Image (tube, rainbow, N blue to C red; front, side):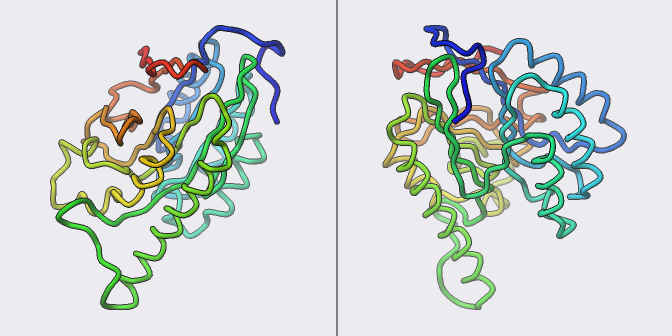
Length: 258
């Protein structure tokens, strides 16, 4: 378990910076580096909701690794669809892990932050659609394979949330959306490719304190799944490099700061 940033318990809220779809490449590497260095002094950790690279090129992942390697706060990330495009996801992941980024894929981690145990479940998630346009488990093997992939994600999310159930603060980090609310603004015809409401079932059951995702560049910033606030932290949606959130162990509402 990681130690708290200041090494001692504190009643101060945990502050985290979140972003998705940073899409690093040669042309924006310096801008992204400045953004990360600018936010690290104000937060306890950084969460990245996938699409870390532009094309899934390990060389692009190394650009982000160079940025993260110099940071004084932990970075936790999931991959997005762009990170898998070149079929070199393992290399992308290893480049970032070599820079001490915690990469989660159907996995969880527990950290000590300001004397509070913070549990994070992370996975890319996948497609499947929402009420009225759900992909069924029927038909061609290819379609049933897509359904099975999302099933495995749902099961992993449920398992992870059970594993961190005793943590005072619990977060879900995704790339694909679990709710149509944060897809408003995207053409309805592509919602099935932007997430799946099947991912909402474990969230409804376990009621984590915060759910973050990206992927929907033209979507809506804020939504809900049951009691849990959901934020689409895609950089184009936020209109800024990061959004900072404050969390407490008293189950008070999440405060999005800026």
